[in-house]
Amino acid sequence: MEISDLYIMKNLRYHAKVNGNESISKMINYIEAAKDLRVHLSSDAGCEIGDDPMEALERLPNLRILKLGMLSFVGKNIMVCHASGFPQLGHLFIDNMPYLENWTVEEGAMPHLSTLTIWDCNKLLSWIGYVPISV
Image (tube, rainbow, N blue to C red; front, side, top):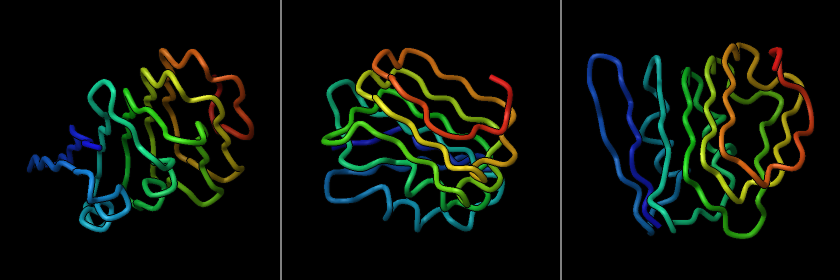
């Protein structure tokens, strides 16, 4: 697995690649302290991730913008946002995730969300739970 295009931007731009031996959770440890965090997580066509990326990403206290695109899941095609997850997230973009089937959002997740864009997720059949904005 190779995941590219992770950007942490403020006045400095940092680029990290996560290779097969590293997990998203390990990557999160490197960036937890960043302020005003913006993450763009995507993979090249044909690359797969084994776990729901939300489980690791929702723990980032300063994540403001999250863009997910072109991710293929191995196993369950489910994303879950837990009640205390994404405390500062303002903008969420989900694009070109053809195998995503279910998305659960627990009440209390993403309390500051003001923009939600879902594009080209043709198998997304169910959206369970609470989203704190008008869609």
